[in-house]
Image 1: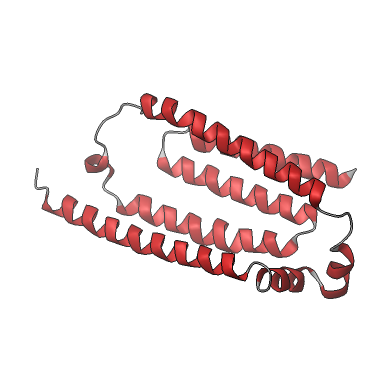
Image 2: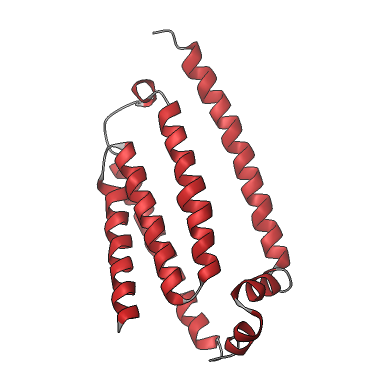
Length: 177
């Protein structure tokens, strides 16, 4: 019963923080809500018994990504970056069916994965080796190619972000008005 209450608390905190990310206007408050959401998700992982994933969630996302966002927010000249105060309602309406389709696909994959997963298949493996070793064994054997492809996509995204950031900083420096 205690685990259910703790899980419910972290779930509520994650949902409330997610709403804060969407609804708040101040970028600093959005980052604080994002940090709260990431910590809540890490708490959910800890309650579920995935200690390694929870620790990685805290180390990678809650520390590194949140610090990166704070540095990016402090480095961007917001007065010059704001083109208009209007919201992008048309783009939101166009993207809404795509987002709903992706959520439906995610739910379908989750439900099919739960049905296809044999009950207790990995439990003995986890108890014998431990959580970290099981993730490493599965990740670097069965899903090695997918792991390397994700690494490549993240590297390309990081290089693209640096190039876009360089162009925007040059644009802001050239603007003398």
